[in-house]
Length: 195
Image (cartoon, rainbow, N blue to C red):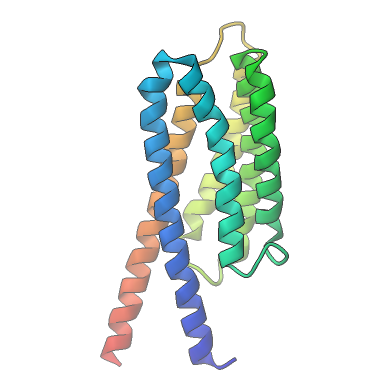
């Protein structure tokens, strides 16, 4: 593959990642808004949102891996998609027990998926911009997960707003990565036009 072909392949992948990160940020913002409004007043709505969140993450990882060369060469995303699918089922089961169990399940998932996201970002570091924000997001997710597990053991029952805060921080990092990639691609395009 020539340098020109490599350049276009990298740019194409970054265009996909920009769209992907913007869509992930948008979903999380909408999810947080729903959680902090309807989710606060209806257990059924809160339960549906808590199930949708890891299910969406599983689907998003599958699509991202497929667009980035397939699940076989994107192991961290394949594992993340599996973990998120398992967590969707775990949340359904935990909802039949208590919100403490739900928060504990989210804690385990946040640690695991955060470390996998961090691994994906490290792998993409040399080929795509904005990965520093994804590394920070993955690391912070793991820390938040440990905090969730601690909070889940407290006597008071947590609410969906605890998870909403976590989702809001995730939305911020996805947005930062998307904007970073947008600026990078714009600069590259302007530089190419000058040549």
